Each structure stands twice: as structure tokens, then as C-alpha cells.
Length: 232
Image 1 (cartoon, rainbow, N blue to C red):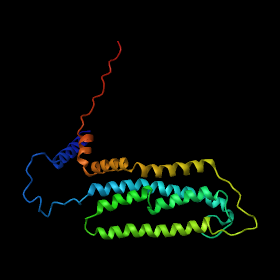
Image 2 (cartoon, rainbow, N blue to C red):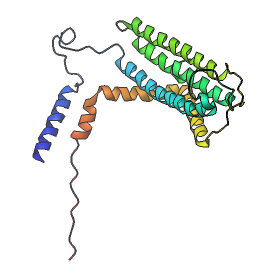
Image 3 (cartoon, one colour):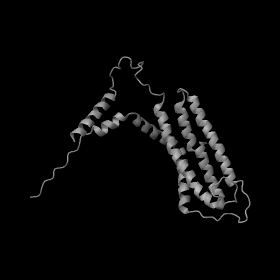
Image 4 (cartoon, one colour):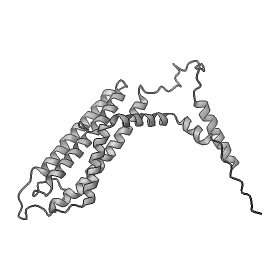
């Protein structure tokens, strides 16, 4: 127990040393010193954009994965292979859901993927080699757009006639509900992007200053156990 208290006290002292004091003079050579690591121009902004895009990419990938199973089932023997098949049942609603998922993955407007890319590109502007980062983000979005457009046209548009007609329709209600919820979440993430950005920036600021968390956890006074009085 005493060993843990000594370790915790050491963490608290280290956090207090790292916490700047208002009005305290800066050490000589701090601004130009080689030992002082300079932060990026907008470090919290980059991290906030990454957090926003993390939420978006999770929802978009989940939507695309949930679409694969019912679409493959509705295509019959062709399954999830990217080749022409007989016209599938419920092609219109699933085609629209696939378009939404493809736009979200590729980062096309007006969905949240485009908003997340704007946050990231705006936060990295002016940093060293930012042009390479912009090129990587934009080119990857173009490649994803071309690939998903070709896949969608082959699945929903370039169909061929078959002896058995359309594949038997079998869609589970829970699958449809989950797809609708994810589509709504992507739309809401784009509509209320400003509020999500503020939350992401606050999270990034807390992650960039761990001393406050260390002081809150290790600097708190332990609560003494209540005294239990034995009945007479």
C-alpha cells in the first residue's frame, strides 16, 4: 500500500512540474532551444478531424458490411461475386442504400465523409509536406469512387436474364432496421457536424494535456471508510 502511494505521489509531482504556471517567466532558450519540441500548427485540429473521421468510417464500413449479406442472398447462386447476374428483388432500396454507403466511403458530399475530409485538410494546411497529404487523401477518394461505382453498376445495372428469373427474396427485418439506422446516423453526423466537431476538439485538447487527468485521478484524496459501530 505504501509503495503504491509513493508511486502515485511521484506521478502527481511530475504532472505538476509539467503544468505551466501563469505569469511564470519562460526559461532561457525555450523558444529557440533544440530540446523544446514545437507542436504542429494545428495539432488539436488534426486530432479532432481524425476523431470525427474515425466515427464516420466506423459507421460507413458497418453499413457496407451489412449490405453485403442481404444483397448476396438476393442474387442467388452468384452471391457476392462481382459479375452480372439475374435481376435481384428489392433492387431499388438496396441500390439506394449502396449508393449512400459508397458516397460515405469515398468521402463525397454532402455526407459526413466529405465533412471529415474538410476537417483534416483544413487542419493540415500549412504544415510541412501538406501537399503530399492532400494528394493522398484526394487520390484515395477518387480511387474508391471509381471502384465502388464499377461494383454498383455491375451488381444493380448490368444484369442478365436467367431461366429461373429473379432470385427468391428473403430479407430479415432486423437487417433492414440496422441498415436504416446506420444510414440515418451518417446523415445526422453530416447535418450536426459542427456540434460533433466541438466535441472532437474538446476530446483532442484533453488528450493533449494528460496532466489534468493525472492530477484528477492520482491527486484526489482517498475517501476514508465509514466507521461501523457495533450494536450493543
